[in-house]
Image 1 (cartoon, rainbow, N blue to C red):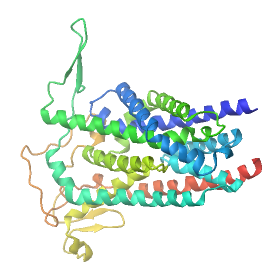
Image 2: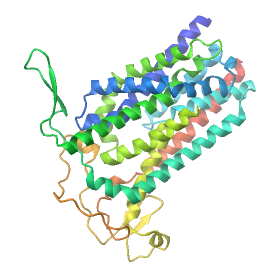
Image 3: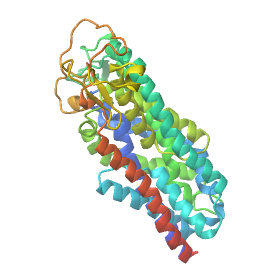
Image 4: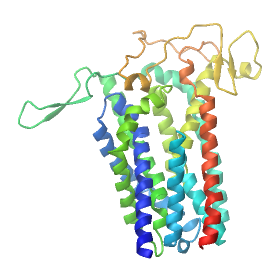
Length: 414
């Protein structure tokens, strides 16, 4: 029986890691693949490589927390391990059916909390720290996005350009005996710098995903008397990530542009850096947290910040009918004093092979805060409040359900 449960636990862990790899690869390398900087196979290789690096280094701290600190390692019997992984995998399935990305980290912790409550071994002090981090991390990401969007984004957008290549950025010359790679002849020096930035940030996101998500797949199987050692757990998680990266991630990479059409490439890179950095720091501290939650919070903050540039702080505090107003509840900019200019190229434009809106050859000056109209602030650049509410609801609901459902199950089994 123990042997069969161990096999079942490993199978469920692979299923969880498979789904994580499939979704995270698209998030990390969607911009790079959509703009023809790397191919899908290359994206899979890069994700697995940097995901392994993140899991093998920083990710160990998260595995240690989830495998032995929230509840003692001895509580992870074969039955309990399979149960925790089952509830984690079920949450992924439910969220996928509703088209909403659930927080795997939060749901996995919720299942472990159910185990701790049923066995009376929950480390309440540590859970207070973890839940506090779950509250603070999105707020920090939101605040950083707000500041960048209001004060820095126009200057970055002024000088940073992303070119849509008809051919891939790196070409292969097969005319000789040995294939020789070379850069696309249409790439300017600025394109080279921008393209390398997109790929490097994708690698950074893969590192963060490996650091935070490896524990979600294998933590219950690791520990004293567990089925796997930490090293074996990391390797199993990365292999599962790879299975997802080279299979279902191909579809994710194709559709990620349509899923986040409203987000310009520059904005996607900014939120990736913000969200990835917040989660890498928490992972280093051994705190399991959601990369999706922090990244989405940065998106909301960046959208609000960009929209708020149409008014000064004093004007925002005292809105009047005579000028543009920022709807704080939705992040929408309401104005009647200027026509909207074309937005900067979006990931959706590139993924669908559409040419971005043409802009002026001259580098425009950045208007002062309160003096500019909604120039690049069309509604596609801001977040959808209805979608945000649905996502946040699922983030709160799935870990809560994991606790509510796992507690009675473990209370009966233990």
